[in-house]
Image (cartoon, helix red, strand yellow):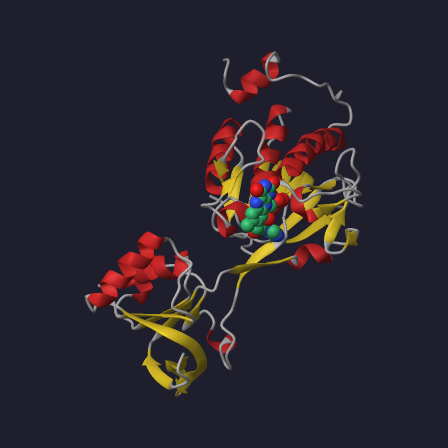
Length: 346
Ligand code: FAD
């Protein structure tokens, strides 16, 4: 559990739980350095989990083929011995250097505060934000009658739900709620991106009249006495149909936003943080950046590159926090200290 009242003191804060942020935990862990990991999403995995979980990756060394979600699961397993603390659903909004000139204060969207010896930004292409429903008045109902994620499913029972989208989230929730509460699914076209099994299950429920499915575009909200009572849907043949509803759950996918990182006073080049290639340190000593968020001559946005950067950044972090320590290169094969940290010897 996160402590909201007093700042949590830690050696390192890692911003971003994508593949590179996760591997950073490992590389720091080998050096005996502990980290807290923060991500604005509710699960670790970054782009792998959000954008292409089922797709195969072929360029991870020694793994001829690995599913994107499988890679994240394997990384989570690999970093287990280091006991990193995760703060998920928690966007890092601010990073400030403390008065001592060395440590950092980290502010987040949930009120969690951390006090860290160093910061590694592994924020990928930025913080993922839901794509919003773009119709007049939509913004004023966000969080009350228009939702981009389900916080508590039971809040929607007994309500007429309009679920928008054709991907896995839209279909998973439509299937979850159908039979429990009235559900109408609306997608802009007849083909769905969701897993074929979910599409088949949805079609079966529609055939059994356990839910309704429509193809079309939301034209406008129907608002009566300051409440949404339905939407007007423009169907493929151009006719306008009224669909009554109490809540709209829109699952149009996520898009990345650099967000607050752009405000932290770090040198940027085309929305990426400039780093050196020795330690992957940004323009601010003690703040490092690895993975898709950084740039340097020859940068390639590959997981493999991010893993290499994490290894060197770990040494950079170590010499920043513990300047007196010698940066010894040890092998996991032969180092008793590393094996102890890995929990493979007692
Ligand atoms: P990300 O995976 O982007 O993770 C960054 C995380 O940081 C996100 O979870 C985000 O929510 C979080 N974050 C950002 N800002 C904040 C903030 N302020 N506070 C809290 N959290 C924040 N690469 C390969 O090497 N091989 C492939 O085959 C391959 N295939 C791909 C296929 C597709 C369809 C796509 C889209 C990409 C592919 N890539 C591939 C690229 C690869 O996914 C990225 O290089 C990799 O995900 C970068 O990892 P990362 O950890 O740097 O960032």
